[in-house]
Image 1 (tube, helix red, strand yellow):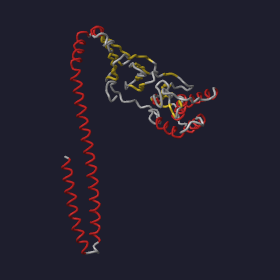
Image 2: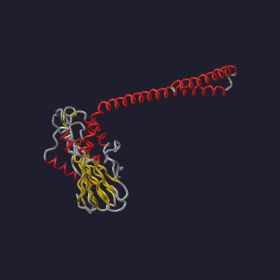
Image 3: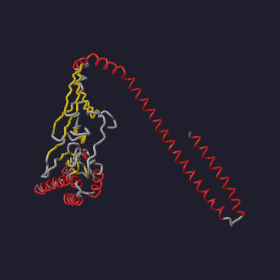
Image 4: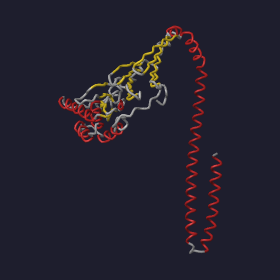
Length: 357
């Protein structure tokens, strides 16, 4: 392929160069022939264009060859690992078949069905010296027309009035609470869902004095940003449910952020302390999580001017690189799924075990 590209392009350039030489010869015989001069210029541009095309095609070809080589090496490594562990996996499979028993529970709520299967593998744990412990639980929730959720752990159902609230916990450090709201009227589907790494579930109730209920969520966008997990900022987001949809409640967010500012002002402000290897580090200082939370909530609620004013008032005079921090913060905030959100659109329903989910 490479040789074909080079040969065909070289032939084209050679042919054009020959024509160009002939035209130059004729042009020299008749200096008044403007048409020939124009053709010469056009051919020169064509040659330059072909040369650029050659470079682009060669670059693309080398990149594809490099990717192909890398993929082949990766596949070879995977096969080596499979071969090395094949006896181990064969043993595990054999033990599972000899130990496995299942308990199935089917629950109906509204038009939905929850199918939960628990596999008992205590004998497997005994045979392997405890290397394989608790058995997995497989849970499937179906609507009248399709499977909505498939999980390898327990899911819990709660009737919260307007919706069915499905919640679950996948276990692990800072991961993951999941919440889904299922509609009680057609189309029977997931109308809201949230996967939180903050270990906190969503709250659904009245948070202000209007007639509409809201969902309270924490935004995990800033987890491990400039520091440790436990000291990460977790801005609070409110979504109001009205007219059959969830909308960002900017007024409620602004009201709650203003309360935080008043409390901070009463307590003497925010303290920026010298950091350590575990804290949020910016020029040797911890950036307090409540500082990031408040300016995030003000920004998301559409009050950038007030967010900047709070930022300027709280930023220590002796802490350098103030503007670079502001820009870095805004870039990170723009990655939040709640930034510039108006109406919540239900995310694509997918299987948790799907790598693309």
